[in-house]
Image (cartoon, rainbow, N blue to C red; front, top):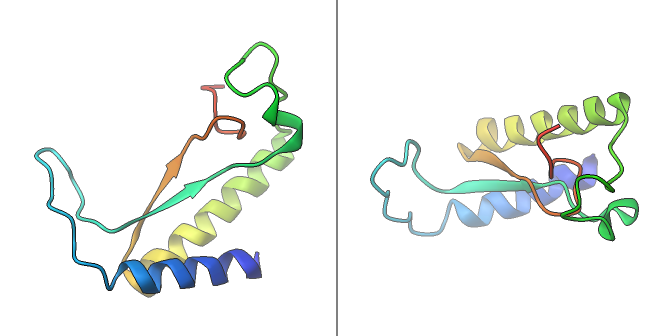
Length: 98
């Protein structure tokens, strides 16, 4: 977790220095955004995109991942004013609706 927080610090301290993007019609919140991606799981790589074959995460693992996402998102918001979004990447555990 300490390593992830340092990565958030590195990314956010850079993106808040960039010129803001033009806000698109219907876009509720201005940039920048921190994109959090649940990615790179050996047990999911080969079943990415195949909901019937893909292994699901345990309830305990899901709760742990959600706790980490909340911690990182709160850190980005409170320290940098950067809104976090979650990207459901293929091969991650947030890939399918269930």
